[in-house]
Image (cartoon, rainbow, N blue to C red; front, side):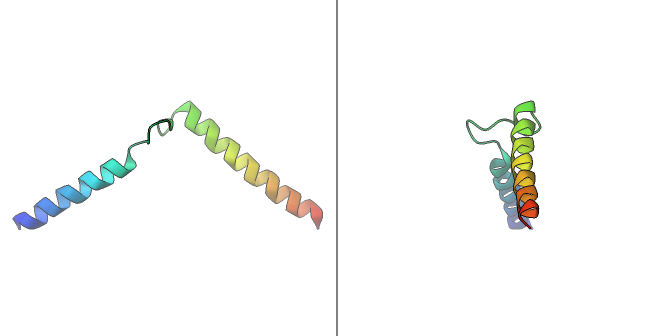
Length: 55
């Protein structure tokens, strides 16, 4: 049972480390992150609209 508890703590720690923002990236939920995500979505939408207009 102890090895299972240790393994679960290690897995949670690994997941937490992977979820941390990388240096230079904005924090999740910050205004800058939301602006970047919105810009990426707008670019995708523009691409879809362009494809539909070519038909």
